[in-house]
Image (cartoon, rainbow, N blue to C red; front, side):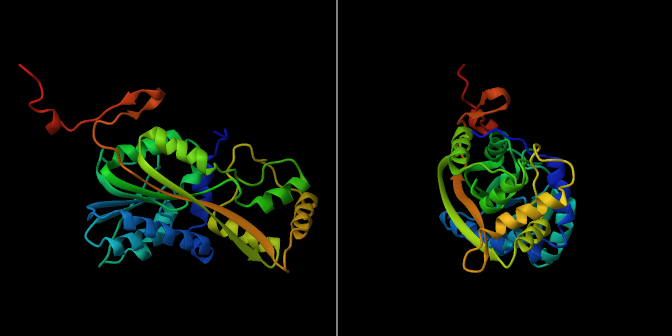
Length: 293
């Protein structure tokens, strides 16, 4: 698996700053959201609790509440300003809860979630084993996890343009479908199905793409990024290199999107905890009467 480290404090900060501009730039996020909702057609039960990880401004949480009006829907995000912005999507008729927490430390009881949903959040978490272990912990047996994430071809044109300007990391790196699938299986999630779609958004000039990224809060959060200001010369060189990629009068920007769903394992199936230790969990009721005298 590709080794790199993301700066979680920067991620929280940049998405917090983008809370008021996010929905002006989230056309791709809305498109991917529709794919995740389609995957929920595989879930035939009536859920009691639905959790949206990385809920952002709450559009997805509101759609989940609309789909499951009798369920308790909880929007979880690391950036508190995003959750404040999400309030406008939580109506008195179809409310959802808003909780500030990390995806790898969910404030939820074991096996308490029927539907676990995350739209374009998991790419901002570099440690997949604890992430999916936490998903297994909170999912009920037979509950469903649906999620999307960016793959390594995302923003490949911008990455290539910056490579012409300098050797610094300016674009976040993302794991491919095989790494994600391996982590899902290792965590013990059942019957995962993963797909990859590639979208190409077009712009009149490279600066418009950069404005979109800043408006979304999706700027570089790699620990290996250069901390200083980018000089005007290098920035101009990057723009010129990107211009050379213009196709049919437009500047292309590729987004590789992994979408997936998997199922919560049955009780008693071992899951890996910290240090690779396998942990098997059973309800107290299932153990009553099992001891022979």
